[in-house]
View (cartoon, one colour):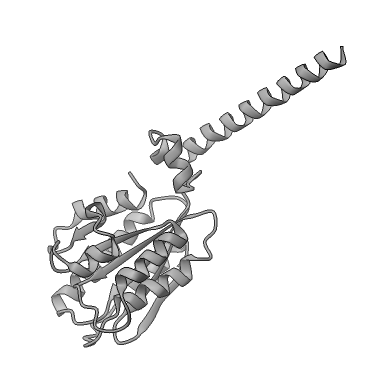
Length: 226
């Protein structure tokens, strides 16, 4: 008799936990419609139960033309506006040139971030270190537990200061299981950005025109794995 009671009790406990976990999964999908059609194995891999995302931007302050700087600034501003419509998003940004300059620390106040992004000046530095921007962003994102992390790097492909961007990027990917998305200010044949994205063509975008609204949507969706 005691054996039967123990068996029934164990079955009841198992049923309860099965229901509890199933209910949590449904709730998570409700919070994160982007994951509704994503396989369970992929959800686990991404660690995105409710899509909290932290993004660090590396802004090129090196050997860009004034036209490239204006285009980069406007696109960055409008990309932040696009992200502001999403929930659970935090952003940070660093400008890399002869030295790293923190534009804004990790924040969920995208209105302030947009204001700062709108006023990034022309630097005209002769040096640029994609490597140092990756290290800087990694140091910011390493404290973001229970959130998916992303890095977005703008670059014309110049890296004449610091170590290997490819090696720094690999360290970040292994440590954080995070993606690096590259915005090329020249063309798709940008070796530096191919290297930092591990030649993942889905993560390389070319910004070469003021008609960039479709690109904003693509990058936004990529940040959320849609």
